[in-house]
Image (cartoon, rainbow, N blue to C red):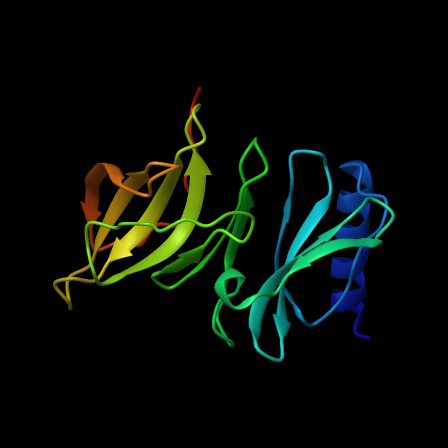
Amino acid sequence: MTRQWAWILLLGCGTAAAQGVDSLLLSSRILAVAADQRGNLLTAEQTASGVGVFRYDTDGDLLESFTGASQMLPAAQTPVLVCDSEGAIYLASGSVVVRPTAAWTPQFPIAAFRIAAIAFDLQNNPIFAVTDQTALPVTRTRLIKLDRNTGQTLANLDVTQGLGPTAVAVDS
């Protein structure tokens, strides 16, 4: 192990300890991490059949996994993993989003896009920061809010041209 990687590992462990994480899972299968409303660790992990979600308690014990056909993303995707305050888990990559904890059909108002980040409003409606690729080579950054129950579009805001989003935050 190089000195640089040793420092990165120590920094990561120190940060995890400072944030109250009792155990740190190190695995090359883990593509994204998040916390649920109870403080359990959620991981998006590469499996033989795609990317699934796994829930671990603070001791690192597996509580449940979401690896059914409608609960996973295709293999070799870079996922976005988030959980709302009521426990609904969202796993997204490219233009695909699944909600492993409950059936849900999102109805995005555009066809060619890439999801970069997800946040939630006070009613737990998901807000997606996306790169709109409808008119390539020009791209646009959009914020799209969907209804958490029906999946219908509640808002579709064109933010800027030429830059892709990296994060989204919601102010209460």
